[in-house]
Length: 197
Image 1 (cartoon, rainbow, N blue to C red):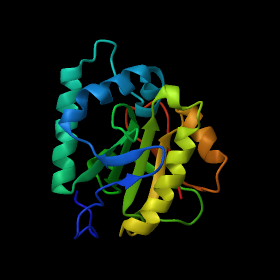
Image 2: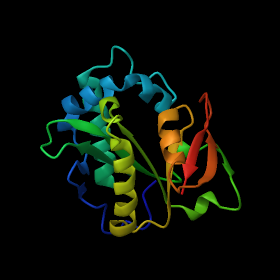
Image 3: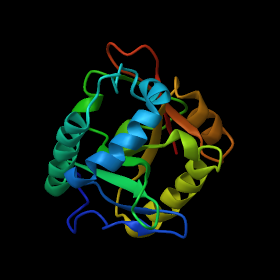
Image 4: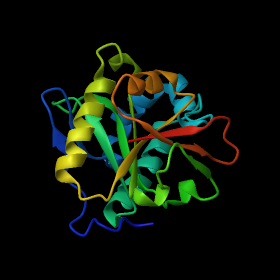
């Protein structure tokens, strides 16, 4: 479902000294694929599926990115690649989805406290390639996203969502001032998703 407050579209991106974010394109398939396959073991916990499979290909990845590019253009969801400043290495990806997106249909969403899911317009999820974890790029990206979302987006509330099986990211978020607001249980998923504000 489209976002309700994005009349002017999504921001073009963000640049810091260490990385840039810009809308992902099908042309990014090879660089994105390298990051995905390097990080495949923990991405399976983040996705709570078998993706990416051992035989995942660049072409299959290109097809996924084509879909993301269309969703972004249509305003159905926003997908950003995270690149090094020279755009020679993909460092990860960022995804913004509406809280009423099909991905949440049929999910059991349990508030932690008295917050209401409907009070938030978007969920934000992201991952950073495995080799960049030791330099705390995941925390730097989270900090940059928080500032960017507050300054350049017109969303009516957003939540950072991760999988409880993606323990590295959960531990990192728990060291911030973000607070757990919801648990999300999706059909046929082995673990819960955790939503923070």
